[in-house]
Length: 112
Image (tube, rainbow, N blue to C red):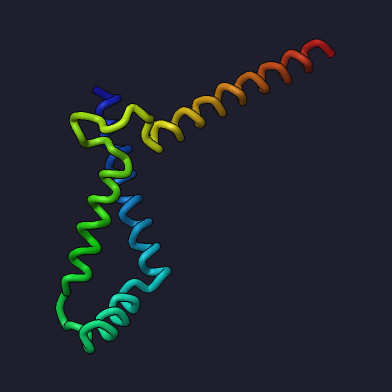
């Protein structure tokens, strides 16, 4: 039971953290000004309400993330690991290397 609560908590933190990261990135590159510039160049004015550019960008961003990480399809297109699986594997290897180094340093200290 406790592990399910922790998993849900971590999921919530990751969800809001990733959303905040995307918003901070958009703020850094001034996406509102960029869209306004594109509207001005293409149609000659900036719409007062949300336009098709924002809608298409939002849908494209979500679909791109889902396709890139390939976690939600029932049948995998490729047998290659996802980028997340590669990073988890690297992390696990780094942890094992660190544990080995700590143990070897501990043995060297004890032998002196």
